[in-house]
Length: 171
Image (cartoon, rainbow, N blue to C red; front, side, top):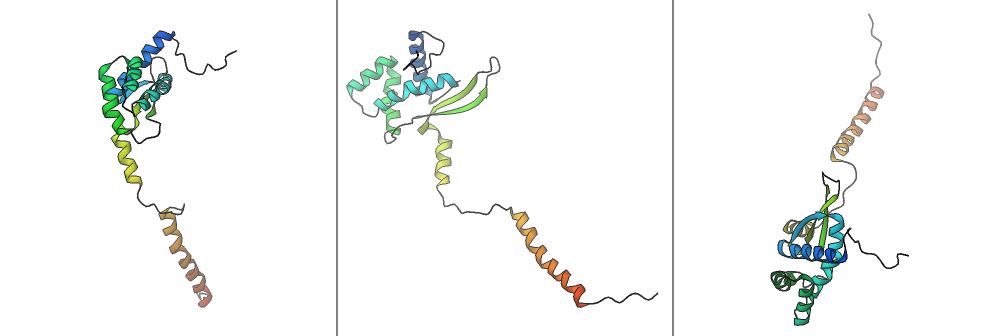
């Protein structure tokens, strides 16, 4: 039976998978956004988010634990200094996956995985949306404008023939 075997093995042995996820995490911390397959991105999210959560509290045991996973001094120092300052108030969900389509060679589904607080375009759009919104009807302006003048015309046309009886033309 396959009980409690939830994570994706990615078609690799355990040591290869651990080094792959560690290298992807290092690249994500340094570059803030990487382009990879959807399966690797989902596995990376499960691997990297607990490490990013450890970086919120800068203690020696946390640094040692993260270094035991990553084995890269520059990535650990950047994670605990720069990244931890930006994500300090966020309660979780430090990464975002954006699907981009399919790879030409093998039709694998590709995506971007990025650190949420480092995408300026998404943050700028979020600030602009906070303005007051108004509710509008579902009819378009063109249909509403065309419907309004027609109603008075129809009434006047109906009244005119009733007011003036036409006499037959004598020829």
